[in-house]
Image (cartoon, rainbow, N blue to C red; front, side, top):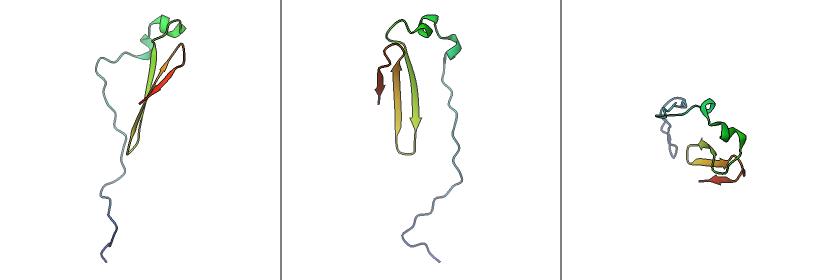
Length: 69
């Protein structure tokens, strides 16, 4: 029987892919002054991905000011 008005999704389950960041610095190698939260300008970032959009957040470690895009 034909499927009228319905599109069929071809493919299996999607798997999250790992990406390689060149020249990445591990969090354990963070400068000591950044751990003390003594200066403004040390940021932590995070990215959230969905099917239709991306959300990038940056948080300043001292002032806790948040920026999103």
